[in-house]
Length: 136
Image 1 (cartoon, rainbow, N blue to C red):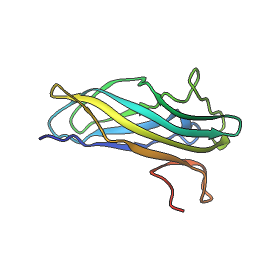
Image 2 (cartoon, helix red, strand yellow):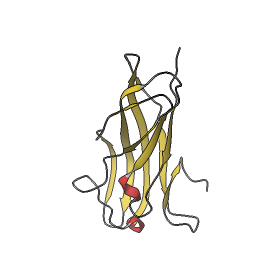
Image 3 (cartoon, rainbow, N blue to C red):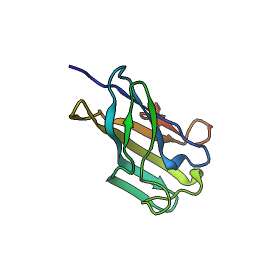
Image 4 (cartoon, rainbow, N blue to C red):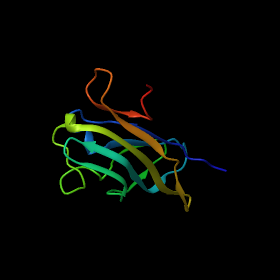
C-alpha cells in the first residue's frame, strides 16, 4: 500500500504570522497529489480584545503537488474579510490550531493525520509558531 507523507512546517513572515503560511511537501518520488487543500481546525485563538475557539476553516486554495514538490498554503482564519485580523502579532496571547491535508492520489481521496501548532509567546523570544505544544 502506498502511503504519502506530507510535511508541515510554519513558514511565517514575522510581520504577519497570522497569515498562517504552511508548507506542504509531497514526499512521493513518483506520484502527484491532486486537489490538495489544508483544513485548519482552530482550537482557540486568544487576543487582547477577542477570543475565538472551536471552529474549522474551509480551504481557500487547492493545488496539484508533483513528486518531491513543495507548495505553500494559507489557513483562511486570518486576514482581511476573515474571522480574525491581526494587525500586531503581539496582540495574540495564545493560539492552538490543527492542520490536516486532504488530497487525491491515484484516484483515491486521502486525509493526513492532524498536526498541531501553538503560538508561542514564552521564552523571551518574539512570538512565533511552534509545532506541538511548548514543554513547561
